[in-house]
Length: 157
Image (cartoon, rainbow, N blue to C red; front, side):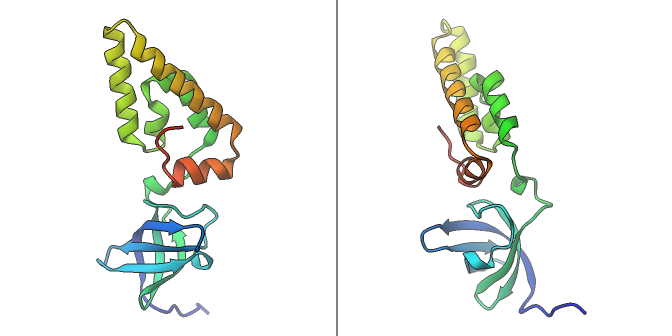
């Protein structure tokens, strides 16, 4: 026998989550915002802004929150894949595109390609940035990588 739910099942996007208070807010597709507490988060991955979620509305609160597996932006990213992209193609920003950080990725791509026309100096700087990010990705744990670079969407080192 199925367990009765408190309200309708909805989809939405996490707007914010504060680790200190373990509270966050979700903007739902029904045009309402729902507050939630960390103990209502039922997925293994840490909550972060921009994550697409399924949840149950209980008044003005969100409960039974899961990451929406059907949304590609919520898909988990492989730390070593990002590290390899940073090592081989970091100067072009490919690792940032992989992590959905499109603005810094585009900056790296434009500076690198523009740098090829201007004696290669800007391209060398982008290579150093890519290599530093490779080292950071390799030396961090999977959980920390997920929290900082995937969920947290940290743009630069």
